[in-house]
Length: 414
Ligand code: AMP
Ligand code: MG
Image (cartoon, rainbow, N blue to C red; front, side):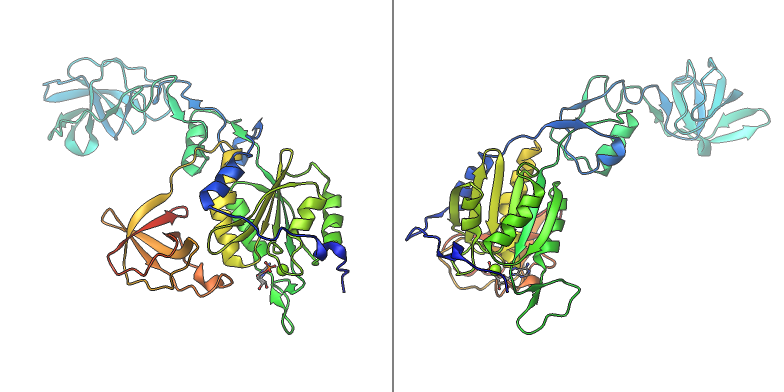
């Protein structure tokens, strides 16, 4: 057994103040520090946040080019037969000068020859010996003009944008192979609970498998942070202090502790933060699930103790920690709250605490539809599987009927 000394007798205030969700978020974001920047290889930059705008180093495209395979001719040339001077493939220099009655065979992406005003598609001509005849005219020029996509100096990607596959491709396209990005917040995640076993182990008796470790490491990854240490630690202050000693005081920006946020005899999250000389800013937030939620700071370092239930983790991370990670990386925050119509009746017990209910949202001809998922308790992982949204229910909200409008928060993409 692990020792469980004095810590559980730490004196607590008689009545903890329960603060509103928005106040809690403000308290946290007010202490979010913008991380430093670093220049990294493009191949490592996926998912990182751009620090400073990407401006186009040239016009895009850089030269007039053909949008199709066909024949370049002068603009509005009325000739019936055209002499073919030669051909230009993509990547080749354009050495020809086109006059009336002349054409150059050209391929998609190739540089337009001098004097060309349009490209006739290959499908719209007939070859007659060494000449071509136009048999149809689509009227389109089939030319991509220099600077059509962007002018030199134009902002292609604003600062604070997360680099997804499309942004990465654009960086490559303009030769930005060492983009400047924000550093990733460094996170230590410690998981408490003597009842926990590894997911690969068979639980005995009242033991349960640890699902919060993987839940958190995945959410930390999606949130763009770097998990520098994750460890399951026996309940008790000393085991936690020992693990943290190994890490070093300044090795992390954020300390996350799973479990032990409440007022139970083995909930030592508060005592841990105090022992580590963190100043505690709040201990309870008025929300469901996730009420016992401790937040503290020590200089530039922030610490959170989360209630052990997996659904609480999921909600608290989405509501508070993900926006914090975004703010630390300079990510432009977007308002993710929308109004949606319920696809089915939604019955629940009114609760004095504002509730974030796991739900599934989808777009139906430009209209956001939402269905509440079955959710019994905050330990119920099945309730969050398949969920891509929350329904935000105000305090004491009463049940809703199919078609009613509710406020939802989207979690990533639909
Ligand atoms: P706690 O906040 O430590 O009192 O935990 C609340 C509930 O969440 C308990 O029923 C725990 O068994 C459960 N729980 C705590 N940690 C985990 C975990 N890592 N994985 C799954 N469930 C957990
Ligand atoms: Mg516990």
